[in-house]
Each structure stands twice: as C-alpha cells, then as structure tokens.
Image 1: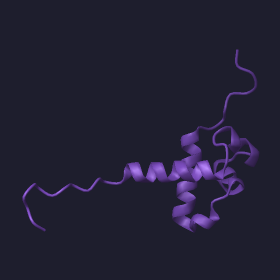
Image 2 (image 1 turned 135 degrees about the vertical axis):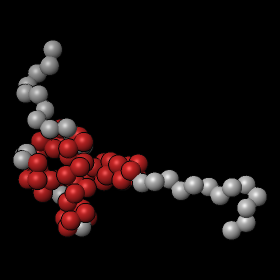
Image 3 (image 1 turned 30 degrees about the horizontal axis):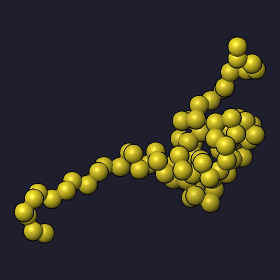
Length: 80
C-alpha cells in the first residue's frame, strides 16, 4: 500500500528542465533549487526523483548522448 501523495512530477521532467536550463544559461546555472523553480516544485522534493546533483548530471549526459546521431563507420576497404 502506497503512502503519502503521489509524485507531482517525473524524473524525465526534472532532467528535461535541467537540460533546458543548461542550454539557456549554462551548466553553472543548474542547481536543485533552480530546477525546482522551473518546474514549480520544492527544492527538497527533487530528491524524490534523483538522489543528488551528480546523479542528475549523469542522467542529463545520458539523455543528451542518446539523442545524438551515431556516426556511421566507413565502408570496409575504403581509405579516408
């Protein structure tokens, strides 16, 4: 049986807000308090979605990396 209120946001929303903030204002602007303000949450509530800022940064890198196009490998026997 679940206790308490259901989460108001998702981990994806937190990561998306952090990426948008980093894109517009730079990585130095990314803080738990600032992300919470962006999504309309309390700063401490973000720890429901990510354990700490280091993990948030890992999730940001994973998300951005996954969205990048993979380079194609050259054809075998072709010299570049």
